[in-house]
Each structure stands twice: as C-alpha cells, then as structure tokens.
View 1 (spheres, rainbow, N blue to C red):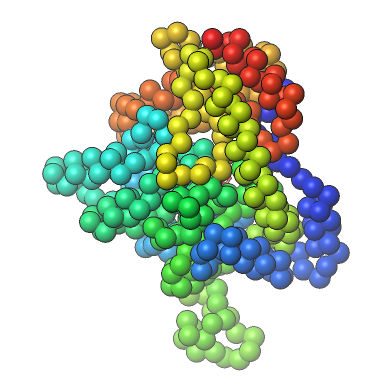
View 2 (view 1 turned 180 degrees about the horizontal axis):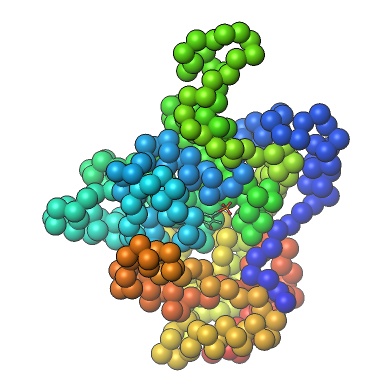
Length: 383
Ligand SMILES: *Cc1c(COP(=O)(O)O)cnc(C)c1O
C-alpha cells in the first residue's frame, strides 16, 4: 500500500535522539529551547512554546487569549476536530465558518458574510477566530486580520498543515496577522517530533501566559509571585497543565527542521507533477492562491460526483494499493457536535466538498515510480 502520508527519518535524526538518551536530561533540558528557537527563527516570530501536541498548543493559546465559558470561538467547518475542541476545553461555545469551494479555507468573504449576518441579527460575535491552513495553503491572513480589527476578535492560525509554507512571501508562523500560530509535529505532518506541537507569538504577554499554562501554572518568576520564601520556592499562579514536550521529541524535531526546506521543495515538486499529469480527469485539482506558497501537506482531489461516486472511487483505489484518505468530514457532523445541537446544512460548501474529496499519496520519500503508479491508477479510476 502506498500511504497518503509518511514521515522521513534520517540517520542524523536517529543520532540526535540517541544523544539525548545518553545525556543528563530526558525532559526540561536544553534541547526544547533550542527547538523553539529554531522554529521561531525560521518563521520570524519572537516567541515559540513547544508542547506535547498541537492540540495542547491550541488549548493554551485559547486560555491565554482569555477564552472562557462566556466566549464564542469560530473555526473552519473543514478541519481536524482539535481546531474546535480547544474552545470547548475552555467551556466556550463554538461555531463554524463555511469554506471557499476551491481552496477549502475560510476566506475574508466567507468570514465577513457570517460576521455581517451575526451582527445584523443581533447574534453574538466571536471573541476568537481560528483559521485553518488547509492542506498547507495559508488563508488570506491580512484581510482576515483587517476583519479582526473591525469586529474586535483575536486570531489563532491553526497551521498544523503549513510549516514551511509562505503567505505573501512571509513564512507561515510569522504571526504578522495573528495573535498565535500553531504547528503540529505529528508524523503525517511536514516535520515530526513523533507527538508534538508549538505555539508561536510576537506578544511577550501571550508567550508568558502560554508557558505558564504549559507547565502546571507554576512559576519561579518573582514578578508573578506573591513573595519568595527562599530559593526553593515556586508558586502556582494559574491552573495549568502538563503539556511539556520531552527532550527526545525536541531532538527529533530540531534535527528535522534542518530538512524543512528540502521537505517542502520535494512536496512542491510532487504536487506540481500531479497538477500536470492529472489535468483532464473528472475531478478538480487543488487551486493555489497567488499570495500563497503551500507546504503541500495533502494533495486533495475533488471528484465530479455526477460522474463518480466517492465511496466507489475510494474502494477501487484502496483495492489497487493506494492508501487514499478523506480530509475532513465537517467537524460539526461528528456525533459529539450533533449532540451539542449542530445540524447538517450549516455549511453547505463544506458538506458538498466532504462528499467529493479524496486525498492521494504525497510524502517526502515518494519515488518517481510510486508517483507514476498513483497517476496511472487515479487516471484509470477517475477518467
Ligand atoms: C493534526 C492536526 C491537529 C492536531 O495535531 P496534534 O499534534 O495531533 O494534536 C490540529 N489541527 C489540524 C488542522 C491538524 O491537522
């Protein structure tokens, strides 16, 4: 089976992890800060807080932006469930913004429509909007940032798919047009630390708050404590969590960062091979916006479902050895969200997309032969 995604682990990665195993620190040593520095520098952001997952990073980002049981958080209808669950962890309400049919991202248009509609009908406006850079292509963040000023909400970029991508030439993660950007280092993403995530920001206050929430809410910073009883003394000042990344994970992630440019170049080349070879099949290919250089986390076809049933195409491709997948079902169609009262029909474009989408294999170590095989099989099934 050719998988839809797969990590690449070099001998240098393995050596970096074994070096940590032989060192004095398995956690809370020097490598986590080095990894944070490396990602912050790559992205041109001031601060980076490593966590044990992107899900944890989303949670502490919401906490640090003041999300609580009175808050409303909006996110994209099409994403992994973590993009919405983080708001529910804080006791907040969530709602979903429909996506653009071509990029499957929230756009200034789809977001502005929902904002205007909410305002005109006296409904609550969001305190935080979490944009999702679907498949590694950035949303139009400058325009979304302008809306955030007009309607007074904070912005988190869920860039779990998008490390190494660019927006208007700036690395995703620069936080030029957001309060916080989140990366995931799960093995199917662009760079891996096994499990792991990171939250980037240019705000010293948000950074300080996120690092408190990451580690039990405990501090030795005298400025935050009531008084120090002595050098041993730490103080818990908020209710935090243990969301820390280990040194082993950070060593893997730091070593992987050295290959990031290569990873993204290679993914871009594979994607452009697909764009050429697959034009003309009964499916729409991904559309790249002029402002964006995607990291190509996923390559998603949208089948023409008048000609082609998705389930049938999926089963036929799987039978032939392609590990195709579906990203994603609209979050609110999951049972848990249905029980919260969300109804089918909320985001028609997202639901139509979901009925037609299929992700085909794309990963760094994909050989030319396997790509040719994918192209041949997809053409057979979708022509
Ligand atoms: C993978 C993913 C997450 C969660 O990442 P973890 O590191 O597994 O917690 C969140 N949002 C999106 C869009 C993702 O793809």
